[in-house]
Structures are given as structure tokens and as C-alpha cells.
Image (tube, rainbow, N blue to C red; front, side):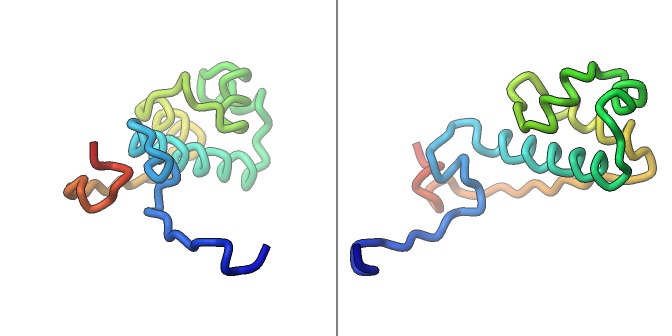
Amino acid sequence: MSEDDFEVVRGSGNIFADFGDPEAETKLLKARLAAEIIGVLDERKISVREAERMTGVTAADISRVRNTDLAKFTLDRLLRIHHRLAPGVKVGLTFSVRDPSDHPALAS
């Protein structure tokens, strides 16, 4: 194959939207929150069992977050987990309203 056989397509910044997932925005927020939680766990060297004690969330669910298996989690639950692991650290969410026709994967 040569370079001529490929078309370069710039993503939207949301891989879920790029693949047409109807829950794209929620999934992206969950993924970003999970990444923050994983970062706290790694940076502070918090084990799954220690995280269970700190958050009141089962070790199995902490492992699910670590493995980004986020189907069972709501945004508010992920926010609570983060807050309990890093109580002094604030998570900021920014929302913007845009026309879905600006991105073909979002227009339906």
C-alpha cells in the first residue's frame, strides 16, 4: 500500500462521536473522569483495597474503573469516587451547546 491509498480524517476530539455512538458525550465525560481517578490511584499509589476503604465502593468496582469498564457507572458516582480519593482536588466540567450539524456523526 502506498500513502495514496489512505485518506486522513481529522477526528472531532470525541472518538465515541466519531463512531456514531448516541451516548458519545456521556461516554467521553465518563472516560475523562475515569482517567482522573486512575491518575489519583497511580500518583498516590492507592491499592484497590485501600480505595475501597476510602470510597465505600467495592474493590471490584474500583477495578472496573481501572479497566475503564464504565457501563455500570453514572457521572455522579464517578465524581463521588474522585472526591473521596482526592477530597481537596476539584473537578471542573465545561459544557457548551453546539449545533449537531457541525459534526456529521452527531447529526441524526
